[in-house]
Length: 110
Image 1 (cartoon, one colour):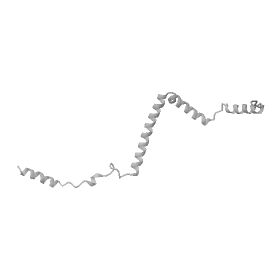
Image 2: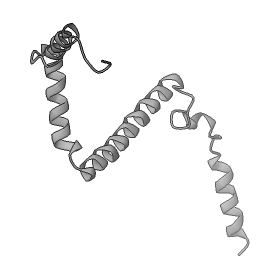
Image 3: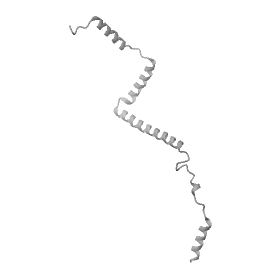
Image 4: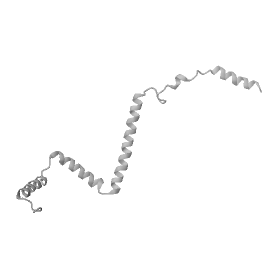
């Protein structure tokens, strides 16, 4: 009938099942699996640990991104930013004589 499975189909299913149930693991996947397992045991089992991991990770990524962006900005705009300009070039020359004359005039008024 419709639900009868042939012997060939059953034997093929057994071969496919045995291939999928193979215990052989490649060495590359073993390292990834051990890392993922260790990460899960440390951070993934608890919601609080996972949330803490995410919060610290986001803050750390933000600090790293901020410092890299600032370094690139300073490198591309060297000598053009407010902190890097030599403001002493724009100071007017001091006229000490004029200041002294003004002080003398105030003393004469007494």
